[in-house]
Length: 341
Ligand code: CP3
Image (cartoon, rainbow, N blue to C red):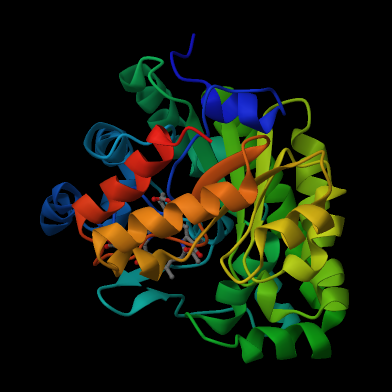
């Protein structure tokens, strides 16, 4: 039984004593305790060793007191399990040296058996649940098919992902074949995380906002909808499509329990678009955590006031930045925990 189930009750639309809070990308990046482990083990070693993944996952629960843990892993373990090589290059980000370019490349990817290829993630989830011992819920996650396709085609990070877009606009049939393969893998993967003990799963569509509303429906939401529907009886889902607030109504209609939003939309407009039957999560500008602490406190209170108490999870509008001082993150979290509404 969970001692702190604020996040789950908020996602179910139940009333709670206070607003729950966690921070996207809280595991890794900003904590000195994480950076110490980084000296000793490579990125994928950290992901593939359940004891390390568990330690990193639990660090922010112990150190900054968030109301949920998020699994330490990466969205790119899925393309890896599908057969593509992924390198995590220090200060450059991910590189996929042999991206998907033509139909011939389909021979190099498959919908894998997730127990064989991603079993280490399920082992980590089980160990984390054991070590958390009911203190807070555990959030699992995966990348949205569109965001994964961006990396699988572009081969690296990009501001515009124009190669990935060109791929979709010139070879739509191939693009949809790949998107469906990613979707099928992701459904099995997230079901596996739920079975191993994840209480919630979040789908990260970091690049959803690069698409027009029509393309977002065709290349992204169509597949997210399949994932949410497939998980309906297994686990609560949160969909975070950064920059895609034009489609909040359509995202709410997927039946997801929660929708993540970034800081570029006004809270009341997000609520208007999403309707009243979904929990909103967000939307503090991650860079604002670099402001002086009194500014962080004031702006966090303004955010809480704007969203109000019901069906709301406090969070950042995207991942925490690596250079945020720990006491600034604590000021954000404590302001939320102490807020009387
Ligand atoms: O939320 C968490 O703290 C859990 C762990 C997590 C990581 N990546 C660990 C990680 C999660 C949820 C992710 C998701 C992820 N990974 C996304 C979607 C969310 C988003 O921020 O938009 C994306 C696009 C990726 C791909 C990726 N992985 C990039 C672009 C990079 C390099 C830049 C960076 O630091 O984010 C990574 C590497 C990565 N993934 C690190 C961590 C802690 C940093 C590498 C290191 O510490 O050595």
